[in-house]
Length: 101
Image 1: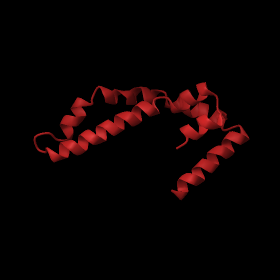
Image 2 (image 1 turned 60 degrees about the vertical axis):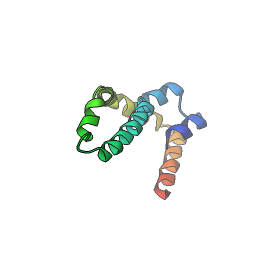
Image 3 (image 1 turned 90 degrees about the horizontal axis):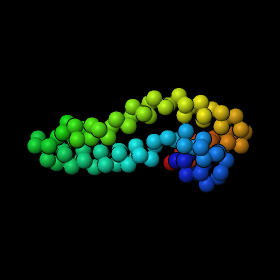
Image 4 (image 1 turned 120 degrees about the vertical axis):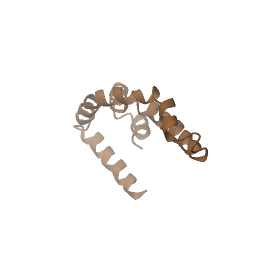
């Protein structure tokens, strides 16, 4: 919800966007695949349940280690970017739009 508008607005430098959003795209793809497999596993339960899905995704889920270890850097970068009134106002507008959904 924030990434695409921020990229298109060019209010935040590309390197800052990479620090803020890091692995979000990769994680979104992972969640999409994981959700599809979990739904499929429930149809095959008890032969293939959620536990088996998580075991198959175990290596992919390690991305959360990198995500959590880099979280402080992301928050610090976001805070620095929000010092700009233009960026801060842009984020407030995005937040209002989200609340209307």
